[in-house]
Amino acid sequence: MYRYRMRKQNCPNCSYSWFENLKDSEMKLRKVDFIWINRDQKFFEWFVSLLTKLELDQADEEPEGRFLEMHMYMTSALGKNDMKAIGLQMALDLLAKKEEKDSITGLKTRTQPGRPDWNKVFQKIEQEKKGKVQVFYCGSPALAKVIKAHCEQFNFKFFKENF
Image (cartoon, rainbow, N blue to C red; front, side, top):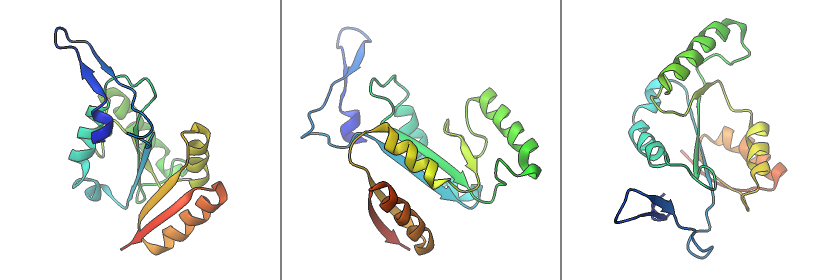
C-alpha cells in the first residue's frame, strides 16, 4: 500500500491530483484481494480501524480499478440462501445501502454471511487478468487444504502459514 500511495501526485498551485504510473521494476504487484473469514462480529473489531484507513486511502477514483479489494465473511451468519435468514439479509442490505457502510464492521465493504464460494472467488480473480496470481493463506490447516486444491485447479501459486 505504501508504494501504491506514493504514486499520488498533487499540484502545488491547485487542488488537482493524479496518479503516476509506476514501472514494472518499481511495482510488480497489481492488485490485492484481501479475504477475511471470521466466526462472529467481535473478531472483526481489532483490525477494522486499519481496514477503514485503507478504504479511505482508496476513495479517490482509480484509473486502473481498485488496488485493494476486501472480502469479509462471517461464518456464524446464516447464508443468503437460507430461508431463515432472507428477511434479516434484506434488512442488513437496505441498512448498508442507506448508511453507505456495513452494519457489522462499519466498512464500506459489505460483510457476506457464511463461507466463501471458492470457485466463484478464484474465477473472478482469474477473469481480471492482472498477471500471475499468488495466494497467501494464514489460518487452520483444514481450510488450507481446501484453498490449496482450488489454487492447483486454477494454477495459482499457494503459500501458507498455519496457526
